[in-house]
Each structure stands twice: as C-alpha cells, then as structure tokens.
Image 1 (tube, rainbow, N blue to C red):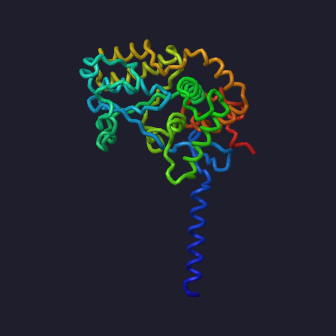
Image 2: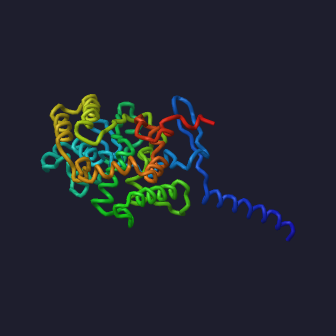
Image 3: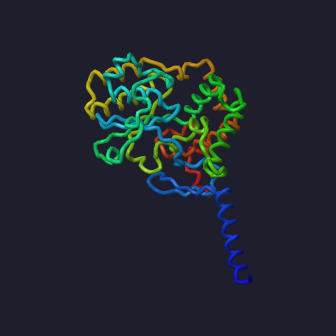
Length: 310
C-alpha cells in the first residue's frame, strides 16, 4: 500500500490544482498597442478581448465576399445585403427588402453555403471580408433600448441600466473564466459580447475590412460608401450597388434605435452614472484598443496609456 500512497497523493494534488485553475482561472491576455505587445494580466478586472463565442458569417461565392454579422452593429442590413448578392434574382423576384427583419423568410436564410465558408473560400486570396463595427458604448445604448426597453428581454432588470450592465458583466465573466461546465452563451451574451469576440477575430483580424458605422444616416454614409467600393472591386453590377447604397441609406429596420424618444435619457445616464460607466469600461475597454475607435468618450484615465504608469 505504501507504494501507492505517495503517487496517489501526487495525483490528487495535480487534479485539485487543475480543477482550481479551471474554475478560478485568472485572465492572462495581451494585445498589440502602438505596434507593441502589452500584457494586461492583473491590471483592472476587464473583460478580455478575443474570446470567440459567435461567428455569424454571410457569404457569396459568386462575388467572393464574406461578411461578419455583429449583433447591434448593422447585422440585419448586412445579412439582407449578402442575401441579395448571393442570388439577386430570388431576392428581387420575392419582393424582399434590405430592411426586412430576422423573422422574414428569405431564400438564403439557412442554406449552409451562405453561412459556412469552405477552407478553399477562406484561403482564396481574392476573397474579401468586411464587418461593420460600431463605437462600443453607442452599441450598448442601442442594445439597451432595443433588448431592454422594447423587447423586455433583460433578465428582471426592466429599465434599470445599472442592473443591465451588472448582468452583462457577470454573464461574460462566466464565459471568460469557464466557471460553468458548459458555458453556452445566452441570447443576451451574444448581443452584448465585445466586438472582438466575433467571427474568429482572435485569429485573423488583419484580413478584415472594418467599416466604422455611426448611429444616424449621415454618420453611416462613409461606411456605406466604403462597402460600395468593396462591392465594385469584386465585380458587383452597378444596379445592385446602387440598390444597396440607396436602400441602406434611406431605410430603417424595426430594430433601429437612433430616433428613439428614450435615447437621450439613456445617453445621459451612460455619460453621468459612475456605476454604469465603470462597468462599461470593464466590459468594452479592449474594443477601444483592438479597433480604431476614438477614446474621447471614455473616462480620462482610459484615454491614456495608463498601464505604462507606475
């Protein structure tokens, strides 16, 4: 028995250490800032970047284009645009609109070749990838207005924004730390997840054309024009290009919130409520580093390279 006791104890210690590290895993991550790697282990209690939990790809092999549908970042219009490009005859003959909702039946909706890129497609040097990205705090306001006030889908928080940000943070922390054996993202996790948690950005962000969008039509114009240039380069016919640009600029989806009467109050609380701001910084700070967003709307500390300071 003595020959087995020591190895058994060692085995138990190793297993205990493994389970402890799995359940209470410390965040350890780096990002490239100003062309150098920064280690953020132990700095604040941020939600880390690049935890890939959702990959909503829409593609057309005809024009060798692939998009990443990021929730609350023009994803519905992206889906409809790519559905049009996949088979313009089916789309137009069915009288479909670029402003249709997710509930609408469209010919491309669940076809594997529209949602699942092949290895050949991904490695083709002529394949163009694009994604609309949105200022993270502005995106949160849209999320709050749509999912919490309109859909009443924010846990039991109702309109309590402090409750909403706490729940978002808690849910993303569980996924980050693997504290649940099967950490399956919830509906709200998928909508609130940082931009960098989408579409395998952790592996190939440099391959994507990132189109920064704003809240209203005027601010969207630049990103729509950039998309038009990509489509033109890929050989999309002029009449389809005109339709996409015209309908996208003029139309609205039912999920659009930039004209909401509640937006001003939500934006005021996001600006002034210290609890809400603290959580928003912890959740979305890395999106402001990973992507080319202006950090002026963040608190003064987060506009600096504070990790360099003593």
